[in-house]
Length: 311
Image (tube, rainbow, N blue to C red):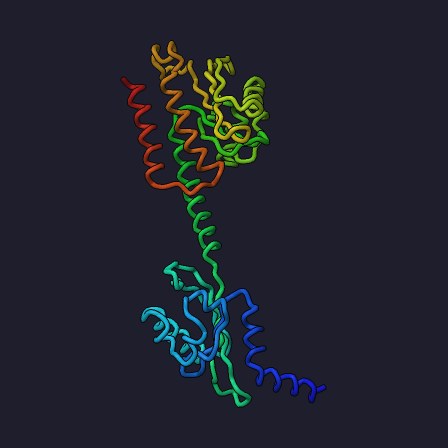
């Protein structure tokens, strides 16, 4: 068995064409350099990545084949590997032959002879650009959700955002207070009431309005109702058709409201609140990474609404 294995290894080494076929079949870029940093070989995937053929690379150092910045990083990592007792892994931006930047995860392994002497380095590169973009998008989405939740609290009307399963995505404290002590206590335990059943917290007619709008996909439903000795104006608006709706609830019996606002059913203020809720829900419902400009526009819309109300 040992004889057969040695014979195979000997034949493998003497057949460079077979060696090339094997490494060329690998889908990820790989290269091998000697102890002095000169290329011995690479595969097709590595050729495509840097835009140079194997023939152009063999016998050249990494300083001959890459920008000074990348070459210096390669040298630094080579030294780190040389001093290490194990392989090393690191991430680095890599510019391909066509000028495209790639976020690469790079594995470096030291090749040593039977005496333990350092003979060369095998580098395997994995493109993780898409993964990094997804991670950054997720991070920005979480940041945007935090900002959006804080902005909901600034709206004086009661606001609740509900998904197609009739679960609360988020709400503000005013909504909880309007719905009564039970909702308020639950809000203290679960800020935003995320995941709560909307029908358990709102009057039956409001639950039916929400269900109806999710079913029909209409733009908006409105009505007044008396609840717990309050005159409430309810506006249910579609955020994402058949998927997410938002409810804006204003207490028209509040002494803070001027008579003109009650008579007009607060239509202008309601419309401004609707627009704000729709933008906030974009952040919450889809976890979309929004820009600072969008957040500023939401703040501006809210301030404008407050100014108009005070006129």
